Length: 149
Image (cartoon, rainbow, N blue to C red; front, side, top):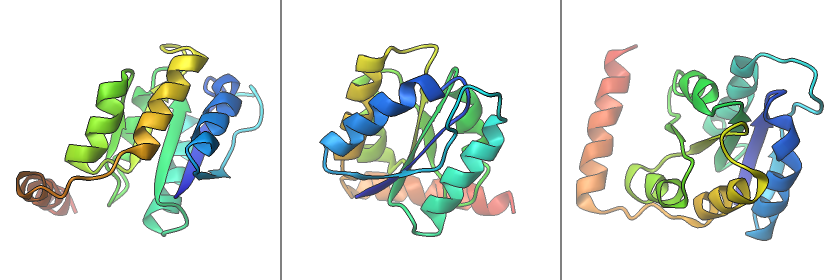
């Protein structure tokens, strides 16, 4: 699996640990920046990761900002992206298993490096169940997305 990883300046300090954890699951990491704590705008990072996922350059994405909220809001504006902010391991795998989330968002000012590593590993190793009820619900989500066009 190839995972696009992006962080803003607040998320940058966690990026190395997140990369290490993702690689530990066997994932290949596509690093889309940032590469310092110099201020950058989180929507720009979310756009890079979201477009990489939609274009098929990556199977999934991970975004890290201060709270995880800003990048989630921005990423969800991209057609085809289902982003979720998760700060517990249950949600990090369940969002994939039930909701087929393709971008995990994490708050670097909310979780520490070891919890962040656990979150991204749980996310990377999770698989969509394909259960009928989940497929039905995702079809309804797609309808909502189409209405917004």
